[in-house]
Length: 258
Image (cartoon, rainbow, N blue to C red):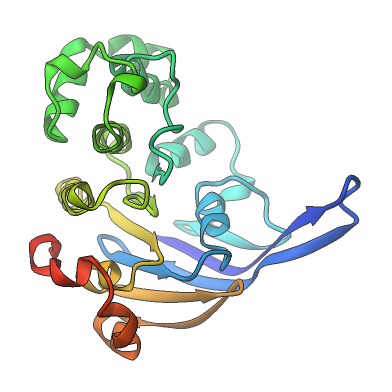
């Protein structure tokens, strides 16, 4: 479905960006329909850069990302809009991902603009209420602003936005890192439930080995912009048992596994 081929991306430095640091260095991987693919790596490994490119924020220095065989960076007009519908992001920064001047109704309704103004206008209060209820929120949340919600509630709204368009792929970039421990497992379980319900693939980007072991089908290990290993989750994580022992999620994996 989504295929990454030899992706290279550098970030410039200095006023004129004459020097550059290579963030991704020939990354290749495939995302299969309906699977949960984990991408794991330390801070600075290139995980978030890869997430942005998977969302079509580019172009890369070289390499391609193909969606059903088409280079996503060449898409124009309706084809580009269709791609934006099919791939959605759950960000780690739940406190900044929503417009602070929008109510939750407005934040969710906004996502339907990808289908055009008519689709946006057809979206009803009942549609928004149903989406919020599916992520465990109530009608009372519809008129609230981001400042009036907890971190866990904000992340649930972001999940509702992601599922609203019934995407084929959801990119979850450290989706629980800004949440307290009591909320993390609840949110991760909700993400898995949502992706399963709409039959979407999930790309889970994380530094938490225990979490990835608990929920992913396959794992790609990203180090210094290079994929250093890829395979079945349990097989890959068994090579990192010591790190997994210290993960909060390793002790609750039965409650969040699919």
